[in-house]
Image (cartoon, rainbow, N blue to C red):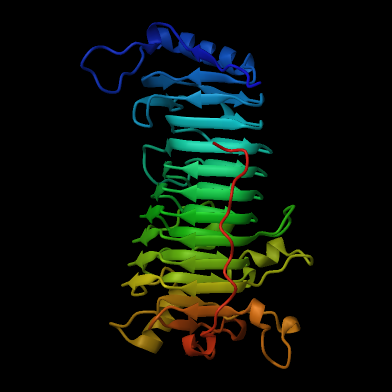
Length: 411
């Protein structure tokens, strides 16, 4: 028999709105009352509880945490119920959740010192209509991640917004069975990132104004390697913001002007997206070797090569006219002239010779492009870009399509 859900209303003068007002900031005498009540509700929560965050701007000066299964945190809307961490003095995140069967929806988290919302080691996670934003705009000192589920299973991220993260706005890492849909990522280093994750569907999202729009990465020294990601029906355009990540982090190597990037990941489908006006290239396929990160992070058990990549039926427009790395800009000028542009798909050219049979890559590991007249350039980085070439014709092939991701035990 299902447990009857207990509704917890966080009361007090700090929760009232004056008639006719929009966003309402509580005054300083009320802040501690609201924060204390919220902390008490999180600490004392029981499975089935719904914690309501009312309309208003609520000042929080330290990290919040939840470690009880089956709790929902619900606001009145991502532009109405706002947890503001502008004056945060303690803690590494805004909200840290270590729990199963967790839902958070219809609220905003602003200006945290570190990550906005981190959910770790949980099953059946729903992040819905949550906005995480650094209101000062892109800045290296902003928190690294906006929405940050990691080591989770059965994850739904939908209708969310992330702005200003110094690493990734909407990120899912080391997870299994993920759907990311109908989100907007803007003015982050990486707009949307799927890292070391098994089975992810990323669709109907908007990524614009980031350094890189949508990233599908594998990184070494992590518990699992990712594969099986579908990126489809997204709008990925004008991701040309200068990279403002901390030096030495993996995303610090992403050149401004990157649309969709696959790095060292396998079994990736990219289809039915509109990808436009990304100044380096609309799609980039690369290995760990071309990131500038491989020497420090080398792991002999890690496969650094992207394999079984299938690109088809995307709509491309513009892009490739102002690469975000000097070496790539020099190559563009040499190959295509002052007014020329890189092709829509840029491949660094690294592949695993040990896996080749009779001099060719096995069919199920190939990089396949079936995208009309779209061209692909092999930059030939293994040889120092000595012999770059247009190679789409050599990669006209198909791969077995991946199944849709289904999430069990989620409403």
